[in-house]
Length: 604
Image (cartoon, rainbow, N blue to C red):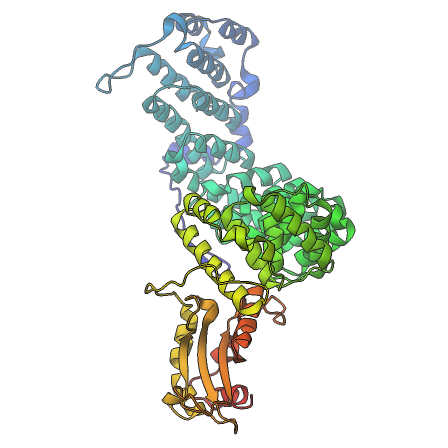
């Protein structure tokens, strides 16, 4: 069927039951009356005497004899469950072990008896007895063919009860758990359970809510509507959950698609409100899950900053690592967080794990944050690099050195080690091809950038690469520059008065050294021909700044972008920044765009 839930329209599987006149008349009676007419069809309907006899059975023959001697009135579905469990238990052990039969052979006598017991159990009025029978056939091991036949018997009656509305939500969840434990063959069947789940999801108990969250990844076509139903219940009763419950819900949501934002908002509100009762282990788990979900709002940012103000550098390594990665993922320059991170690193640099240390340093460099205790921090970092140089993976070591360069702290004490043949051989032998190529590019950048900016650096150490190469550039930039061609000609006075995508000679082919537009000005501030050599007073490097070139506050450039502008100034350019968002909001050849370009370029 096609179902609309709010603004969402989905195609979902639906159950249709063929009904006879007798079944319709039977369905007119209240459910509790139909169940009461079968007192033996509940768990309490098992005769203690018969149960004791079945428990003493040690072979298939004993089970047969016990069933033959039982009064037909005492052979209830509950007794059928016990007999089925015992029969499956003794079926493949001892002298009753069966020889394997070929597919061409029909079912043997034991299989026929098991099938009859399954049919008996499915006549139970209580869904609990039916689930006990399903649990028996799922728990024991035997051929897949037999398992499928037995399980299908129970699946049919469960689907029938869902159509009739005579099965409770906890029983549906238990049936779902049992079916998914059988493998992927019943996932399509589980998708049909959404009707009853959505109907009964309004008044779920907390245990059922958590159980349904654990089963959500197994729903496929109906996952979205089931998730929205349980999300509404969670939002309404969010204050009844504990820290472990919220952490578990967030961990499940990381495995799903299209998570409702209202649900995440409710969970972050809970975090901010109940921060005082969240253990540190659960807090770090919540932060990592929010990072995986790509979610940051006012509540989560307040909760994080309040937490680090209270705990400070006394937090655990796992928490500091999670917070550093969280801030880096969202380009969030949080002063309280990074003050705590730097204090923790200084206090624990001798015992901190290498992955956590790499993440902390990389986050500081990426966000272009110089720690408040810079002397102590970089002294501790130098000790770590010196003592554990050989233990740090080569790609992570290069990342740390590049992060230091972003912060204008030049790692001169480690340059000879990094560019030594021993380190390069180790790097070539330990990294996979793609990661090796990226690390090579970073090493080339580090070598050339230190040569340009650091007078104490006696480089370059790497030979120039004369091989022809190409570089992939951001598609957004290329499309925007294509639409700006005529605008730039109008502003600077012709096509010959500017160059685009300019590569710097004698420097590595890297996006760090590629200039979007180069414009030359004379002493009167007027554009000159792009190939002019004499009379050039100023060279403008026009850079289009993408949104990710700045931190979340749109005020501070990231370490990579700030370093690029710094190096271009070192090369003698006057750097002009154009906002990508501003250019996108204006149409080509419009008055607004031309005025913006003129104000930026010609007024410099």
